[in-house]
Image 1 (cartoon, rainbow over the protein chains, first blue to last red):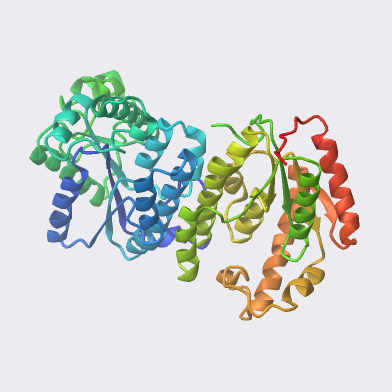
Image 2: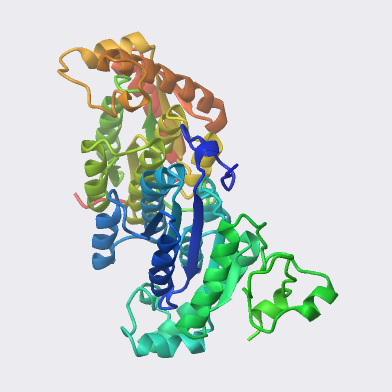
Length: 270
Length: 227
């Protein structure tokens, strides 16, 4: 049966949420939406009903958040709670009904991005974890992991540096580039911490789109076939297993036998 | 990020709590007058006052699209905005800040709506602990009479209609407020709320309140306002 991260919400029957909840996480500009755009038609070709959802798109708070960001007027705690409201609206009005109807829900980010952003802005990690403790545990979290040096050219040659994605509200530096670098480095650090705690499946996102997609697809196939989840990031394996681990970070090919996972050092190292 | 009880500010914070019809707003208004006359820089901070979040809350209520969880979170967002942009700066400046309703209202209301009591308390743990928190205790019947006289209709969420307690708004309101009362009673020892018997004459209640506030302000440095 589906579980939450601690607290149950009134009136929610967890037993009938039979769909699959798949999260694609990763920092700004890492290619999450591109990958989701590839995963969705692939799943639909196999006859799976798919709901695609993302951040700040709820009918309740989406507009308010947009306005708030334009004016840059919200405090840190307020902004975190506004995001939590938006997330909850989406969880209850989009994700839960779709899971109840047996859909595969592909979500572009989940609570982890919201937590990482809050924590780098000085929010107490214990507080933000508690705030989101009613969230449903997903069937898998695919974390598109990238180093800041690989991230920067992508952002430069696509849409450029964004005020929020550079953490300019934190004023770490006058210079947008320096600011982006510092902010994203801090964010990626938080993602690694959260990844360990919540058992992310790590996908090396510095590879080309096709390679990343193939890995993601294998991971999603594994989740949908009902094979037991392997929290690659979370559980350090015995030494022998580590030596057999594939060279690539994170997800390898889906195999029938439980695949040895790289230990933390192998996964994180750059 | 400072938690409840960890903040240290020169200003003072007094809050009133109680169900609708307990007379708490009247008492706070009288306290405000007195504090000003005594020369304290005193400011009201109102519930639901943030323009930004207000719009979202209004939409949610109008379209009845709020669940207990989103109801709780949107109000927490609004409260946080008030805390960060209004209450904390005022307390830093040394003002006496008065709040008609505070976090205890949220605790009562959200728990009655089925939210986990510990979760709600943790959610609001960024709030400043008040210098004094007054709870105006009143029997349900007395409060109901005060409110329903001269009222033409209760609002959907105000009457707790989302909880489907009763078909009639008035009956729903009665059951809902009764449950809120139970939650308040639990919070009296938990948060050391100062209980004022709200069936006493208005002047008597005010005398009690002023005595308590005065005692808490004795050591406080005054923020003098220009005449």
